[in-house]
Figure: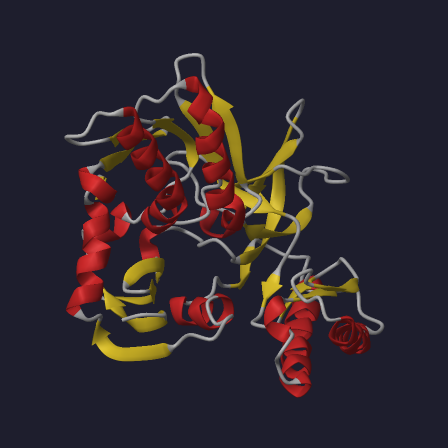
Length: 347
């Protein structure tokens, strides 16, 4: 099917949401359930446990005896209650990454507790619409300690819908901000996959939405299960192999039967363009090292430009470090998703 298609159903007995673009899987969310203590996006009240001198961070005691790590430590003292949001997925044996900048996400706006003021997405360029949204945001936030970012989806939305969502999100922010004292507690759980699909994948509107009461359709299951294979195909018989290790994620690009310089550059560019999607869907992050097929040094600039374009929409938490002396390419990506491998035993 051409266009954008959102499909809701179950994968391995868990709620799942999938977005297909022109027949290819592009987004995937699966309910983690018991696989992680707290999923990214959850907001908790914790207690500062230990200040890390020289590292600029603190360990935070979370509900159920879990431990989190908060990089910011300004004004914090041991034993102090603190509101935090889970910002990523912990590596095995390490503390859960946390942020003190809380975000309550909606379809049209992101409410920011403790950071007042209304801001408009840069993607909205029409001056009249920006002014109207600014007025709407200012009115909703008047006298509040929270702020809001009006998202691009608000540009063509009904003002009444935006105002209703803002009112609801601000009420949640007020309740959370007023609940800072006390024992560690989960205050707001991470969104369910269907909520994520409605909130983050609906701009632009999908061409179709399909909802299943039970398991996802076979073609979608096949697309998810294919991600368990380290190898993914590239045009012209080329392929890449992506393998996570404890220290890093390695990616090896191969041209297949054609070993010519032209084939190497073509395979490398195809791999660079698909790499953000592959990492995102597989839930991989941290340090990533890519062994591209051999190309002349003069072609490295072209390949690096393709990488920059590919990762531009992947968010600000991807850092392209560049080439090593051995000709490998290094980048780092935030561990913001649960590894897909954790779900595969359920399917």
